[in-house]
Amino acid sequence: MKLPRSLARGLLLVASLAALLPAARAEGQLRIAEQFGVVYLLLNVAQDQKLVEKHGKAAGVDINVEYIKLSGGASVNDALLSGSIDMAAAGVGPLLTIWDRTHGRQNVRGVASLGNFPYYLVTNNPAVKTIADFGDKDRIALPAVGVSVQSRVLQYASARLWGDAQYNRLDRLQVALPHPEATAAIVKGGTEVTAHFGNPPFQEQSLAGNPNARIVLNSYDVLGGPASATVLYATEKFRSENPKTYKAFLDALQEAAQWITANPEKAADTYIRVTNAKIDRDLLLRVIRNPEVQFKITPQNTFGLASFLHRVGVIRNKPASVKDYFFPDAHVASGS
Image (cartoon, rainbow, N blue to C red; front, side, top):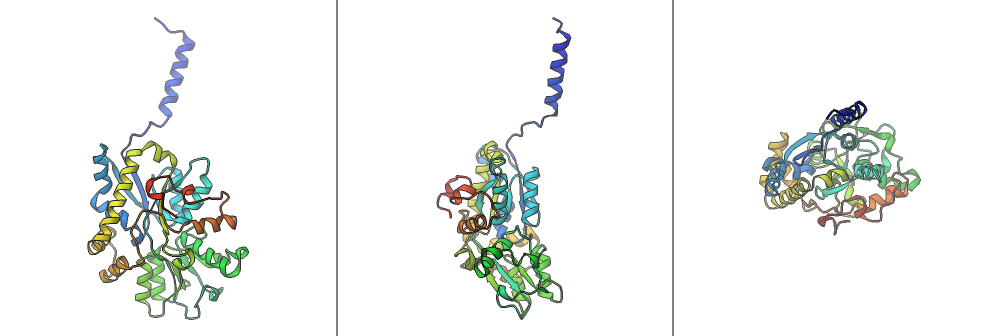
């Protein structure tokens, strides 16, 4: 039977439009953005031992995992929103920024912590004993100005010292620089960079490499104790459309955390092998075995920073608890 010309044209148009639409992606792809430092050791171990793939196979899905190296929370957030990655690894500061920005739309929320690590603000300027001593000639290197967790912790500390109205008083002294380059500047000296708010092991390398380097600020003192400075987060769409991949990833993280705790020496070797890090192994082991460092996926002591950022107007949406900006998974129930 011959179709009426108008109906035939309509069916052709529908077919053409359908061809332009992206095909629904089956489970089995996971693109993870990571950055620099031991704080990403859970991901290094998962990559080395192919733990995501292992747990995916147990659930009946073959997962192709890609690890993408980026620097700074701003670039990680841009990659997540553009669809270039599926899972973001960055500081809790960038998480809160993107949670607030996507609230009611993409609904980006936290997936897991990458562990508790103290972050040190280190300086090689002998005149600087506290953050109140920084002057116009100082430059504080960190991953992303005004967005990274280091920048947010510094704002939190500034608000406590000078009041909420001056929470961003030290933003003008901040410069964005990857941790390896900032560490080299502190160790070498003689550059415009006189301070670096980093993470392990770069902060320890600075302290070991320059006898004039000292700790000005410890993130634990600002956040109220051991805290999950670095976290993982994703869109609501990815979580809902990829339940097996998502669970395999969480199971892989949990296994990696337990393995690192039980095997610190092997974990150090994994870090050096996977990242090609030029680091003294004994120094790295001291970082991993530091009693202040805890490898766990439950977020801890993040809510104080979240409340502060809302109070000073950095984020518009007021979180009532950690469960607002983390997905309601079992390991988050006891989080803070």
